[in-house]
Image 1: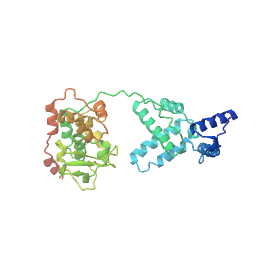
Image 2: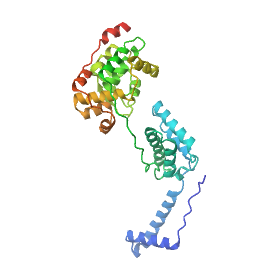
Image 3: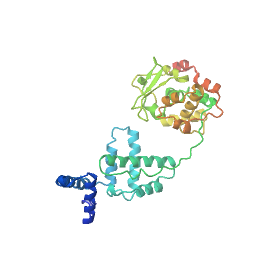
Image 4: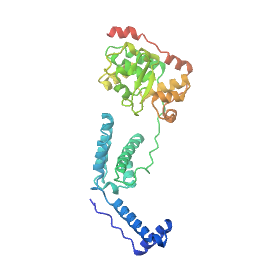
Length: 340
C-alpha cells in the first residue's frame, strides 16, 4: 500500500505563470513584493500539507469497519443489516484492501451492477450503504469526493398496490379470537387502524399508549425513520384497553414471525403483499378524512410523495367502506375477559 507523499512535477514556466496570476489577483505592487512572496510561500506550504496523508492510508475494508463502529448507537436490526451488506462488499469487491482514495466510481458501479442488481430494492439499499461508507470517509478527511454519488439508482418497477377487503379484515379479526392467537390482538389493531409499521409495533410497550389522550406515541427510538409522532386510536384500535398489560411489557408477543404466518393461514389469506396493512390504513384514511398531510404525519413520512406513489389504492374503494372501517367495533371486552 503506497503511503508516500505525492510527487509534484512543475516546470519553471508553470511556477512563473502561477506567480503572475497570483500577483494580478491580489493586485500586488512592487512595494509589497516581499509581503506577496511570504504569503505565496505560506500558501504553497499549506497546499503541500493538505495533499500529504495525515495518517496511515486506510483500505476500504478498514474504513467500512470503522463506519460500522461509528453507528454503534443504531438499533441491532439496523446494524445487522449494515453488517450483512458490508460483508458482501468485502466478499465480492477485488479492491477492498486498496487505499480507499484509489477507489473510483467505475469500481463501485461495477460492484453494484454485478452483485446487487437482481432486485431494484437490493440495488438501492446496497448503493445507499456504500454511499454512507464513503460519506463517513469524507467526514474524516480520508477522501475528497464520494465515488458513489454519480451512480444512478435502478428504476424500480412497483407492484400493484393492494389493500385488504372488509371481508378479509373480518376474517382476520375472527382468527384472532383463537386462544393461541389472542396475544396478537393489540399488535394487529395498531398496524391496521393506526398504520404503524411491524418493526415499530414490535418495539412498542404498553406505556407508549395513552388511553386518556386516546393516542399511541412512537418516539425517536421506536420509529423506523427516527422521527417521533402521536397516532390517534381509531376503529378497533380503541379497544386496546381490554388487552393492556404492565407498562413495561411489550405489546407484540414473542415468536412474532411464527404467529404471523399462523394468523394469515387461519384467516385464509394466501396472497400477502408486503405492507398491505399500511396500504389499507393509508387508503382508508385518505378516503375518509380527505387530508393527505394529516395522513403523512400519522404515517411518519417526511413528505407525501411516497404516499401518493407507493401506498394508496383508491380504485373501487367507497366512502361507505372507509366509514365502516374507522367505525369498526368488536366484542373485545367479552372475549378478552374469557381469555383472562
